[in-house]
Length: 355
Image 1: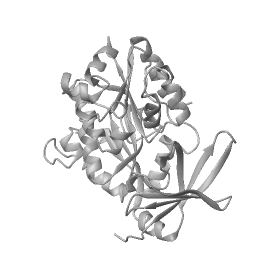
Image 2: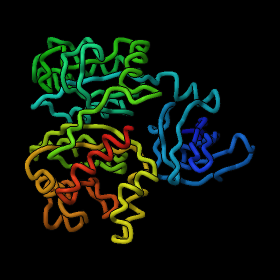
Image 3: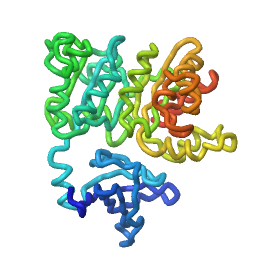
Image 4: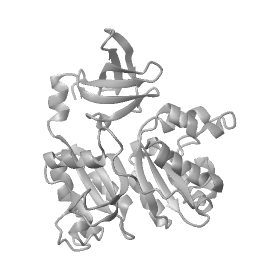
C-alpha cells in the first residue's frame, strides 16, 4: 500500500437548520484510516485530518451514505481521477431478488454474498407483482441492491443455473439453499438492466414499492450498525432463524440523528447510555425486521437476552446479545421492550421513516 495514497470523493450533507445542501471534498487515507473534509463553497478546511475508525474502505462508493460525527454524508461523485480509476473501474450495482420461503437460509446466504466480495447497499422486502418484475413469481420477496466488482456477473454466478440441484454445490444459491425454481431468484442481466431495475425498487426520488410490514401483533428487531460493520449480519440472521423466528418485513435504513433521538426519546434522562444509543443508531446502516405472533414481544426479547451483553453471557449465553454484543450500547440488537410498543416501533420504522 502506498503510504501517501488517498481517496477523494464529493460529499453532500443536508443542513436541516439552513435548508441547504452543503458540498465537501471528502478525503480518506487507507494507510491509517484517517479522514479530512474541505468545504467547497467557502474554500476552507472543514475537518482537519483525523483518525476515524468507524469508517471502512468498503463503505466508500458512489451512492453510499456514511456517517461522520453524527453527520450523514452522501457520496455523489469522485473527487479526482485517481480515485475514479482505482475504485470505480470495476464497481457495479445489480439487483438481486429472492422469493421468501420457509426453508430459505437467509443468514447463510448473506454470509456467502459477503464472502464473495459483494455488499448489500439497500434492501427491502416487498410484495412482487407482475408489473414490478415479470421474471419472478408474484408474492413476498426481498429485493437487494448489491454492490461490488463486476457485481452483475458475480451475483448471477452466485445464484447458479435454474436447474441446479439442492446440495450439489455449496457455492450455488439455488442448489445449496433449495431454490429449485428459476422464478424464485433473480439477478439483472447486465449493467444497463440493473440500472433500470434498481430504479424501480430503490428510486432516487420517491419511495418505490411499499414494504410488507403488517403492523399488528408484531415486534421490532433492529440489527445495529456496529454489528453490520463487523460483518455479523448473516450470523445474526442465521441465529434468529435457528430460534424459529421468520420475518414479515425486512428493510435496510440509514437513520438520521434527529430520528434516532425521537425513537429513543423514552430513554432520555432514564438510562445513562441514551446519547450512546442515539450515536450508535445513527452511525451507519441498520437492518429493521418485523416479527409477528402471539406474545411475540416477550418471546423475541427472550431470544435477544439481557441488554448488557456481559450479563447475557452469564445468564443467557446462547442469546443474540450474549453471542454478538460488545457492551450496553453496542449490544448488536434492539428489540421492543413492552407489548404495547410493538406496533408503535414497527410503524415508526416501516411507515414514518418511509414517508
